[in-house]
Amino acid sequence: MFHIELRACDPDKNISRFYVINVGRDLLGDLIVTFRNGRIGNFGRTKSHVCKDLEEASKIVRKSLKRRNSAPKRIGVAYEIKTISDPDNWLES
Image (tube, rainbow, N blue to C red; front, side, top):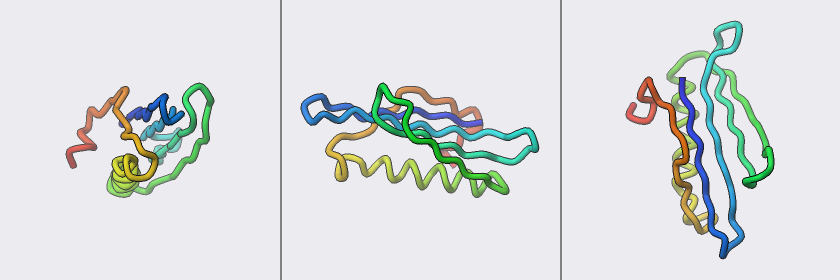
């Protein structure tokens, strides 16, 4: 349903991070929002949220992307989109 991979890289500051968000359905039809983040080259940390509807899932995704948007203030470098799959236009809603 939705996939985005973000990267924040600045070799001078030794910053090399990734952030991945996936939204899909499990075998029972529940919506699962999965976040994976860490240093590029490592597997990183994974967190998942089970959502009752599309509205809750999109709210979680938007909140997370808003936080990534504030990265220049927090870590000194902005995240850039590496890959995106948004057939249902989650980013526009």
